[in-house]
Amino acid sequence: MKLIFSPLSPFARKVRVLLHETVQVADVEMVDVATTPLDTNPEAAAANPLGKIPALVRADGPTLYDSRVITRYLDHRAGGNVYPEARLWDVLTLEATAEGIMEAALSMTYEARFRPEEMQYAPWVEGQWQKASRALAAVNARWMSHLAGPLDMSHIAMGCALGYLDFRHDARGWRVGNEALADWYTDFAKRDSMIATAPE
Image 1 (cartoon, rainbow, N blue to C red):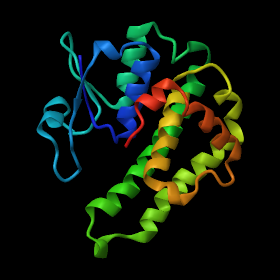
Image 2: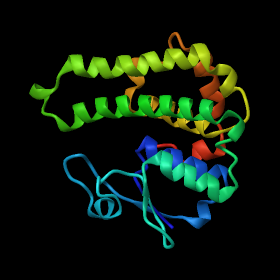
Image 3: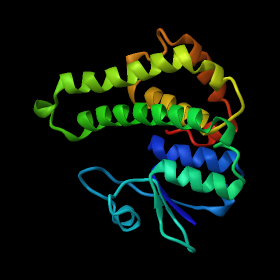
């Protein structure tokens, strides 16, 4: 298998963390590509007609894309431990919340990187941040008991979302008012899988 990815993508990082946690790193060739919404990398486009990463190229089946599809597949391949049936809906909901934080934060990044300054729309950027802020507050208020439990995909997704906020939007100070979540992330970020996949 080949993973088409960028080391800066929080969505790709989810997959890479899962590979480490499920001891599948050696089974996947990493193909690092540079791609943007304005200039799609040909290898990314060949793997996924949407041109988005990550994409998992398989020898025995169609290429998989969308990080949640890839992680479900890799979890199944490893024996099905990070999407536990007993709390599946909680896991999927919290994973979706983390994905929403990533999407909002990535949109903010793209606005600053790819639009000329005179075309950037500050209220839209603030609207994206409000989405992320509401999600962080909800996790801090309602989901800490879940995050304190056994590792599942929602932990990995939330860890990667918070790591991306630190990487691209640290000045926003997401930890203020979300102290329980910040404390959890401080510990989670020390996992070997998180250290091995940290963006630089």
